[in-house]
Image (cartoon, rainbow, N blue to C red; front, side, top):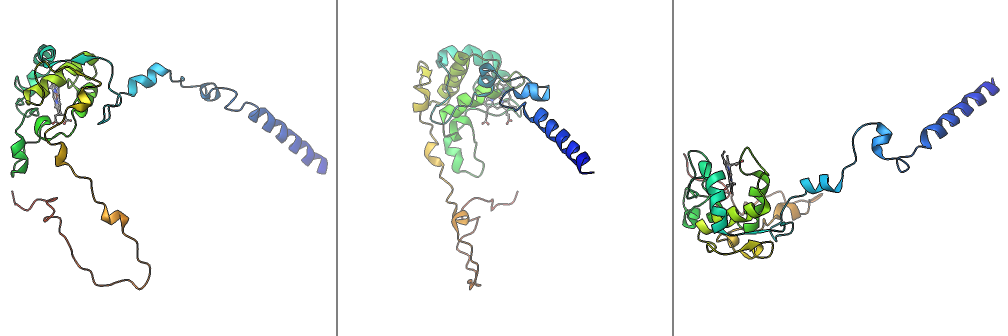
Length: 214
Ligand code: HEC
């Protein structure tokens, strides 16, 4: 009986060696599972297109409103209007900053967006709607410049590139404040806790919720 157990154990250790000698480090995961292909630098670069508020990630290239105008008229105006006013239910890209404090704020690129670099990032990844990522970096710099010029934020001949775009100051840049996060920082009370609750503020007072009825 003991010898048969020994045989089984021997067999098992043999199997273990057979299975584990082929470690993932000695062969790629594609060989290991028999499917998938390793990602190339080019594959990763195609996904890695995000542009930060500070301009990190902006590609090489440049554009002006003048150069962007024909691209905008051919590829964007059908939905966003010749003057960025928005056609039908498609969003306007030009809007008055003054409306932000009204009951019906017109939140557009020009009136609301805090960073010009976000405009490049958004167009580069998502526009033209239905044919995203079909524009060259120069075309994206161009239409970005054209939209900023329509909003009177830059001049027609201002050259936008990886260096100049992050320096463009949007009108509503200082209209954003960091969340205070007092609820996150609060210490949890575990014993002898204060049972009386004092309401110190209301969402409606902080203007984070609507007070008017439709
Ligand atoms: C077929 C219609 C269509 C075309 C063409 C089109 N867009 Fe858009 N665009 C949209 C729609 C729809 C949205 C809103 C998408 C959403 O909210 O998810 C949008 C949103 C945007 C926004 C964000 C607006 C905001 O305030 O949220 C920008 C900027 C923009 N488009 C720029 C462009 C540019 C530049 C082009 C041309 C290269 C273009 N679009 C072409 C339909 C279009």
